[in-house]
Amino acid sequence: MNEDALQQAIANPQNLGEMKDADAVGTVGSPDCGDMVRMWIKYKEKDGKKVIDKASFQSFGCQTAIAVASMATQLIKGKTREEALDMSASELSAPLGPLPPMKIHCGQMVEGALKAALDAENAERAGATPPVKPDLDVTPQPPQAATLHDALANAGKQVGKIKIVMQPPAPAPASAPASPQS
Image (cartoon, rainbow, N blue to C red; front, side, top):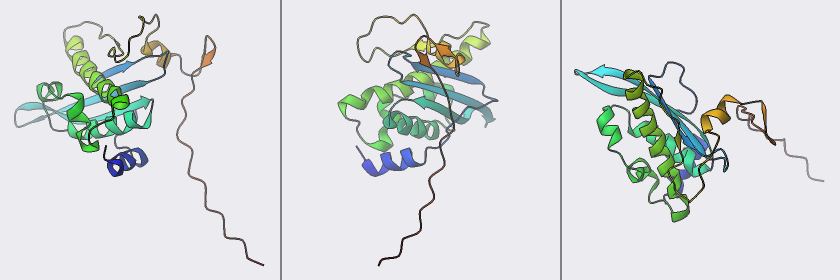
């Protein structure tokens, strides 16, 4: 793994946050373990083709998932829907270098969120309600009753024993002046 690229993507994630005017949204995750990636996509016409103009994401999970999602939003810009659909998790995480085995699921979640968004756009054109995709069976788990969509819809509400709260990041603390030496 390219630690410098990972640290840069974590310290300064690109395209983080909800996109209000998105053409498509896709979510993958598991409310039980807490990992989730949601991706928004906006298209534009370029040279007679519909291409991805911009993408943004939210991630509730480890730093690697945030870094991969940040990289993916940059990599898919300018691609057609079909080109983006063809991208694998390893391609989306390539700028970070090979992911360790215990982090491969991070790339798979980002790939799943991207494909869910691209599939959602198709479903909306067909008049169907796009599904919220469950986790990609990265680890064997029983089917989940609640969906991540439900978890996000209940933000700030008490859900069972867990209260889901979404907050903006805290500002960095100001550095304290050095104290005089005696």
